[in-house]
Image (cartoon, rainbow, N blue to C red):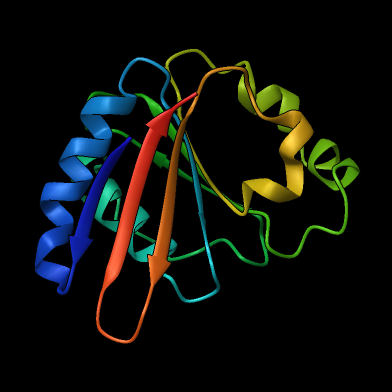
Length: 140
């Protein structure tokens, strides 16, 4: 397991680069942490490095935002916070997204679709206290 303790947003570019490098083969990253832990902020930093589009924030209501990488690949950012059950993921075509070749997939609140996650992915967990964040990531 890799870890980084951060006291500043200035640490995010280094963390984002490490996560991209670690996840490059699977291109599926699941982000967990409490509400306000920094999942969306970290994904925004990763998108700054990968995407040629501007970051649109969390897709809390639309459930998914689509981006294009600098090399032309698709990037999907899902926020499943509002999902009531796994069937709602099927309603937006979850299985189709998983079949996209070479696409990057970032998922906030993956615990809402735990049974639908792929076999191999990078899990990033964020723990926070008053002044710092602990980022932990490992491959499954």
